[in-house]
Image 1 (spheres, one colour):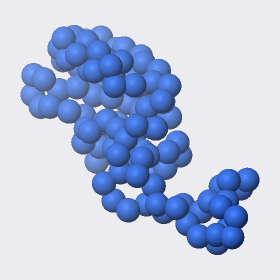
Image 2 (cartoon, rainbow, N blue to C red):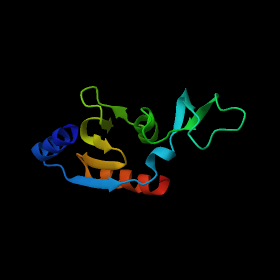
Image 3 (spheres, helix red, strand yellow):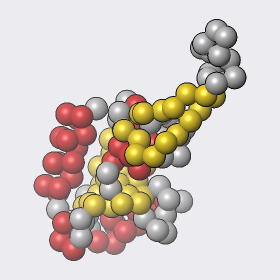
Image 4 (cartoon, helix red, strand yellow):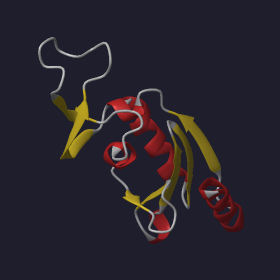
Length: 121
């Protein structure tokens, strides 16, 4: 539903909509808080099976993953929508796993964002 609202806003404002698939997006974000996970089955350290591992990087499915790699503010109304900037430079990104729907007041902002994403991921 969040992406529908994002698309509706873009249509109402006459903004162009872009799509981007980022293959390794969530594997590159540095975590700011301490996050621990159980050792995955088949990868447990012999003799230390009951221990947990501290994550330094985000993983797929981790709640913190979208927040750490984008660096934007999460919408208070829509959990999967992130924004950057304000006024005439607002850039909105809808996130579903590693698929992005991107829109902005200025096409140059979208182009710059996509180039940065390509260079990073």
